[in-house]
Image 1 (tube, rainbow, N blue to C red):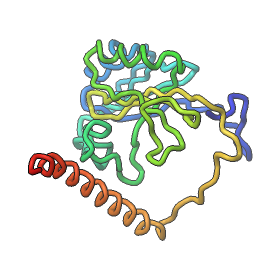
Image 2: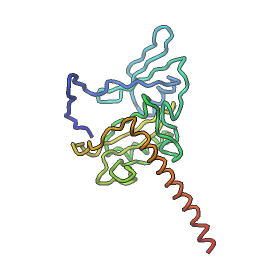
Image 3: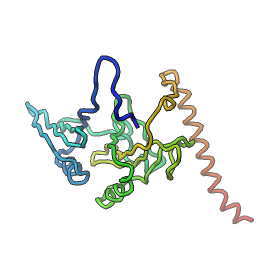
Image 4: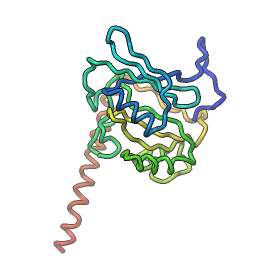
Length: 220
């Protein structure tokens, strides 16, 4: 987790996120989900001038807010471009990648000791939610069990518009050793894509081998 007493450097003293503004298809449905399912109080509503639409704000705690626009002429969402596929985290074939400039997901900070209870509560409210994922230093960078290298625990789910949401709980304070990678550029694109293709080929080969094993045993 970031140091809770840290401050930004340079010319601007930023105190955190004031609000994050997203776009919904149906404001009434959005209000119902965020107030009745997640329990975020609706704190400000605007009917925009000249028929432009609406702009509503929800209190998400700690002085932060989440806002939504509703635009009557907005195009439909394009899963896999504007946001992750709604099968992401549930279906191995679904895609987490989204377009440049897109909003991939929103993570709400929760207490580590509440993670199991909050997951059960979401399920009770009819929300499809992932198992708890422990992000760590393992080869896949995620484990189903809490490990010594776990730095954040997460559960993922989607709102009615397919916006990917996360409840996240930090488990360690970051230090200088946590910044160890060179930022990628466009020149690195092909190298990363080749690694993706190689990984996909390995997974296909492993899957095919598992399918053949029962038949081979039966043949003996």
